[in-house]
Length: 154
Image 1 (cartoon, helix red, strand yellow):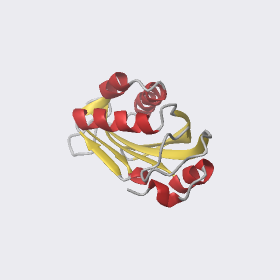
Image 2 (spheres, one colour):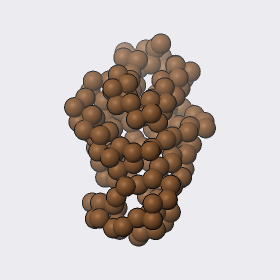
Image 3 (cartoon, rainbow, N blue to C red):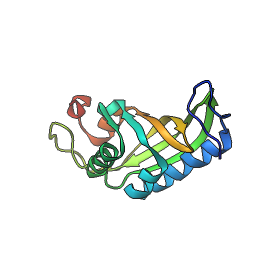
Image 4 (cartoon, one colour):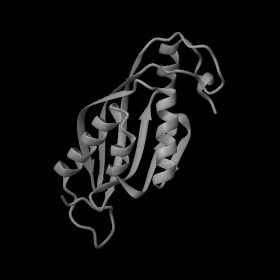
């Protein structure tokens, strides 16, 4: 597998290998298998989740970030339906589904499982994911959960 982060001496980006790595990450994250997810991330990886305003860098922060994420959405699942790449960034999209356990300000939720579109951007180094940016419509999640978008403000 040859997947490289963009720089002059980088090896050629391999779309199929990158896609396979991202599909494996989706599988283990849907099982909430933190150890397997960490083995797919580069040791210097950055994981961004702009809708939640969160950012983790490095193995220990990623571990804590994933633990916090699964505490919020313990039945999380993701289904990726397609992929595209530009230069050395892979974009995957599909649907995430989960039942939120709380909001950031403590509003009561309706207890229903939500499903909303997602797109995720990835970059690679040393045959691992070195950067991920995870995007979804938090307003849609709030609406399906019976609360205002402000309930998820940090």
